[in-house]
Picture 1: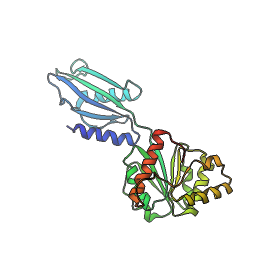
Picture 2: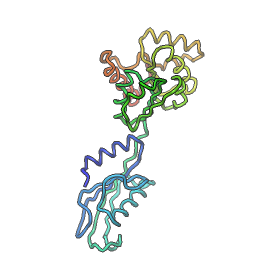
Picture 3: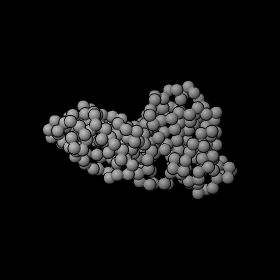
Picture 4: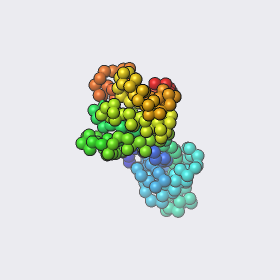
Length: 264
């Protein structure tokens, strides 16, 4: 039997990946039954994906019940079945199951332009959260340095701005490119394509912000949109080490996502 901690760890992973599931637990048993009390399983719309409930007809019935629940049933239900009368088994026992639906959190979409030192520290941190991360960079060698994460997609592009088409109106966008000249077209194209988005940040100093604001005005970007750009990127905590910068950026993103703070 899988440990309960293993099951809930799997649920957390599936939730991050946007998969709705039902956790089925054998909560009571009487007589001769095929499963162990406390046994757990995870069912998605595809069927059983983790754990087991003893196998056979009763497990198949529990899976079918869980899939019905996924299609729009109650969030938490219990079912008790007599194995002979209700399931058609030769066993004379009775089993009770608890069905708990766990809906996936809508994946939080984070788009990062740049795979350099700060992104190398930031992406593994964001990968532990319930978000979907996309990284764009024209440098294959830097992209290859990332470990594999199920909720992170890496994109090799000819230029940074080629990734702008992947930005959505609900995206959190981080511009951490190789420099100012590469930040400008990304910021310009994101604002032209999407207008106001939940977060648009660019790494740099207050002096860099002033230059960017002037240049983006020259590109025809409205002041109301420019006011939403976060530069310097990250909260005013930590030092200049990429790992500490990554923590400050993550904290800023969570603050804005959860508290609805929109001013830079």
